[in-house]
Image (cartoon, rainbow, N blue to C red):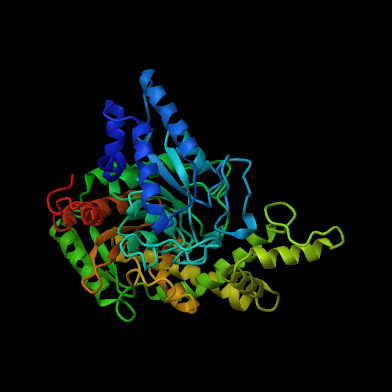
Length: 508
Ligand code: GLN
């Protein structure tokens, strides 16, 4: 069983295709793993083993009948609990949605189901995807498999932790300011935020609609690209979805070739506030990519310094509007409805009881930023900064193929360390937010362990709008270049720690 738990999604698909393993065996192996470790990791809010095994059996039956299967059919998947999935609770990590069952599937969930992926369950997240550690979850915090005292990142910490703990070979995430990339960075896994409009937001519980983007998470670059190809592409149900061909991300991941590519190191995303161990590993990754044939230059994006400030005006403004729908009437929780209380009172009591402190903070900030008299000074100025950031990207991409930076300024911090300091928490997204503001594609790839604390460091690749393939090309080249140092992909070290497998040369 344990070999099945350790295998990549591509390997598992190969085993299913050739009949060497059934989807049921593979699914059972991952359910066993969840049973064994999730009491410590707490990646999942909800696991449905019966449903998963039934889905696995359906794929096995289709294979037995000689049907041609898609490239990931029968492979298990963990789903961030912000995607609507029928027949299961969807909470967005909030008590206000406790017990709510969505009446329809998100387009992304529908696509993974149609492709024959086997949903294991729903993963934990910061409430309504607001946070960088999963500590804002209305249920419990998730722990980082590299060190259970540390955060797995956020908001998609559950998905990232499930991957690093080998509970699932693939996972879905959403990224509004870094919620796919920052968890990937601090868990030594891969996560990509597609170009805005590249994946459908239909049926994904909205945080900030002009920034939210669903995306794939995996332990290897190829696995992540395979999932990207399944979920991406135009959806008439999402008005911001782009009606254009999806870049061939799988071919780019297979090519893994950076020779002749020009990589721009963003000057503003380093220096003060960045952990020396992060900068050291980032520098080593650059050297490896240069060795692989990339040209490395420094690029200045001066307006990136406004990104965090502008994000914390635009995002809460959209949050204040999007979360107005949780009014105690239509979904989930209802408090104080004793037959005499008025609707407004029930609404107030419900929102007070159902929303956590961070969500309330953002609703209040957003409502203030949008209020008449302050709108121009706050929301309006932030939108201008957003345009300047997009122009920095445009200028940079006229001279380089991709931009690169560390994915986040530090490695995984300790659980509890930043809960009383929202600004320290927000700083985790310093490097990732610019790409949400501009809507371009970006991903985080493992680049080794920090010599300071032995924890994973992420390398961020940012590519122009609709050039998502470049993110994978560079990520895969980095994975290849560093494979010798890691003994395979980075998470193999974590597996080896537990299983005593060969650290060097033991991997694929
Ligand atoms: N950590 C960021 C925030 O708290 C990003 C969240 C996200 O991408 N969903 O807003």
